[in-house]
Image (cartoon, rainbow, N blue to C red):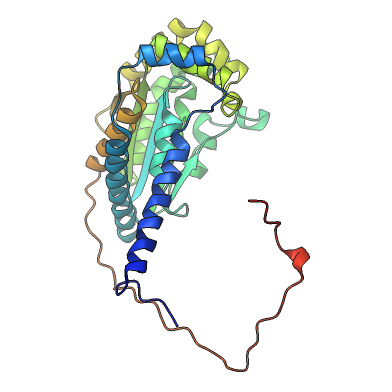
Length: 307
C-alpha cells in the first residue's frame, strides 16, 4: 500500500531527510579540497573577514532559489525571453553564481551558454553570428557565461582582435543590443568585480587544489600578467556599452557568498514575475495486476555495491 506522508511521523522524518539532502548538495559545492595547502588557507583566512554564517547563507540561498523557480514558471507561462550576461575577470565568481541560479531550475527552460574559442569559419563570419543561435525562444532563460564582450576583453587584451575590429564592436554592440530588446528579449548584464589581491589569492588556491586545477588555462595565467590592460579594457567597455536599454550592473565579488546572494536578489528584482496558477497535483493510484510477476534480472546487470 502507498505511504501516507501526512499521517505518520515517518513521513515527516522522510521530508526532513530530503531537506537535509538538499543542504548537503549545496554544502558539497562549498567544501574546500583537504589537500589544499595549509599555508594558502592561512593566507586566505587572513585576507578575508568572516563571511555569512553557513546556516544563514543556506537559508537565504534556498529562499532566493525558491523565487527563481517562481520566475521560471512565470517565464514559461508568459512566453518571456530572458538573457543574462555574466562578465568579469577570471575567477571573479561568474561560474559560482550561475551554478546557484541553475541548480534547482529546469534545464529545458534555463540553460547556460559558454562558447569555446571561435573556429576559423566562425572568425570569418559576422562577429555576433555565433551568439545568435543561442538566444532564447519564448519561455526560455539563457545565461551567457561570457558573451560577445569577449571582443572588448580577452580578444582585445590578448591581441586576437585588432584596433579596427574592437572599434567596430563598440560601434555595433549598442545597436545589436537595442535590436534584441526591441525583439522582446529582456537583456540583463552583470560585471563581477574583484580586487587584484583577491584574484591572485583565488589563482593560488586553484593551483593548490586538485579539484580546481582544470579551471586554470594559459590564458588565465596571462590575465594576471596583463591585469592593468584588462582594467583599461573593462573601463572602456562599461563606458561605451552602458546603454539605457541594457545597462551594466557591477557585482562586488570579493565575498563569494554575498556576491551570489546579491546578484540573484537583484536579478529577481529586474523581472516583474508574478505567481502562476497551478492545478493541484495529486498522485494517482497505482494499477495492480494480480497476474503480473516481476522478472528476476541477471546479477551482472547491476552496478556493484561498493559503497
